[in-house]
Length: 468
Image (cartoon, rainbow, N blue to C red; front, side, top):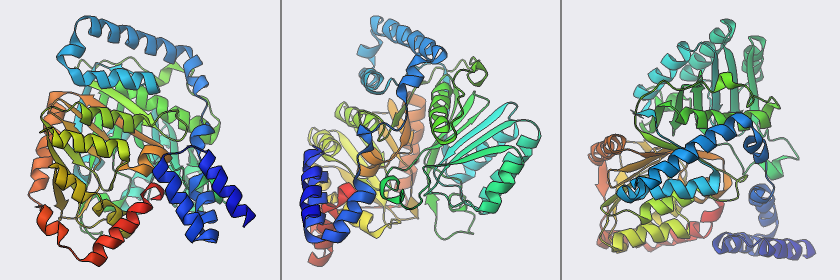
């Protein structure tokens, strides 16, 4: 009993989001023993215990010079009135202040829809690598596509290409045999925060959910797809998986490289930041404005959440959201409601059948207030909608790894590309419209007539939303 009281007071004194605090306290009260375990496993606040050393990055001369150069360019654009002409660019100024996320100008961005577009692009870039391949991946399966990529990495390492692979120890289950084969062939491979007893209690919650590939410092990939057969849609796996990735060439690749190196230093101890060979000068003349924004328990702010909140709040015409889990925190929920109530067309697309029953139930608990505010909600019925995209007014969009839920906003390490570009935004909007052909639109009257038992289970799941 004394342990329960002490833990309850500790949770209260952490001054978390009230919803999260109440969820943990209720679990502790009604399920005392299980509640203690859940908090120890899922509840510790790493944001106050910085996992990575950000001073390392800010003190690095190469990165500091690059940031200062881009800050000067950002100031020049402001003096030219660009932020007045493109008000959504104000988001970039906010994220520069919260996360030192550099707004880059000279980029080319290609949207890769589903595995049939993404995996050939991944493989082509890696096959053409001349100096290095850096991969930071949540899930790497030992299936057909996984073995293809593993063998390619081994072949490139044999050619003399530097190959580094960081994988999440919970998301991926690489066998000792595979790891041994990789390391014996000069592929440097490390897990992110391995979960071993007793470390289980403090590390299972803070996972590296990022999906980054950087090749030779001049081409990068970021988005929702892991390296697994389920995304290939070849018929070998059950169900269709709908997802989106971005291929980026240009200055923004430096930002992806930087984030990989932070993770790599953490998992391996190897320092790469001081070597300019990993940051080649870009020869791309494209004009896509791209800002790579990272977020995680090691950052003082929920950077991606704040960017999404500000983007939706500044929408004037329409908002398009695709997410596999719609469990928004209070800030994002109010931003969406405010946009819809002010006459902005808001369309939200979620899977009709998700891969987690409790997360799906919690998601469904948010549908009624969205419909009441005037937002349109669509259930994607072709398969698992796994894309994490946002389009605002056809002028700005977001592609990344963060779901629209508490876990992505606060608990896991995530990374998103905020893209201020009409062409890319319109491409995502077109994909959204194409996906509507496989959706069922929800009606408020019919939604409210569902069985009481189902609505009750959804409301119960929502109580634990901050824990999902």
